[in-house]
Length: 180
Image (tube, rainbow, N blue to C red; front, side, top):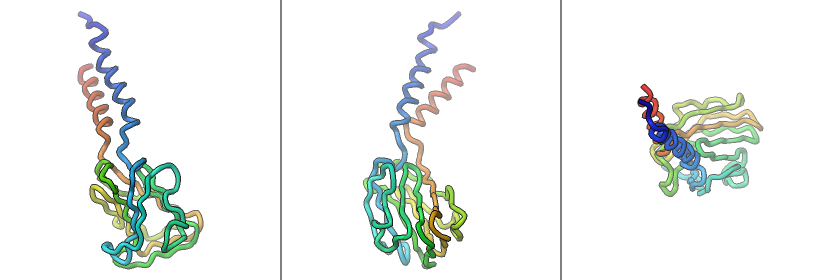
């Protein structure tokens, strides 16, 4: 016996509706306020702090960064990009780097922070220099050297998947199971 078209079309329509909603459910920083802090000479000492709303483009230009005008910081939905405009040697202390925190607690939990990409002029940056908790991600650049203008470090922030994305996965699993 053949099922009416409505019975098998409903799960597909529901899945399409959920997929359309995924583009609206962001897990990352875009549109949210992030506190960017330069920590130096140790993890407990804030050298400077900036609250920024993450959008398209660079959040902190060399003119915004008080203690060093050799780089800019672009925070994206799921990345942090340091772009350098000059040679730089980061002092090797207990901690010399940046922490990025979800200021208002509105972003889904951070579950990882990794090196995504670095240019050839960057030396002495390792995965062990990065760490995170559910609300913050930080990188210790102590001992890192930058050859010059055009060098960059791109770090990837990993978040818990958005609820809508999980719903799509669940619906697609049910559809596959139903077909068996």
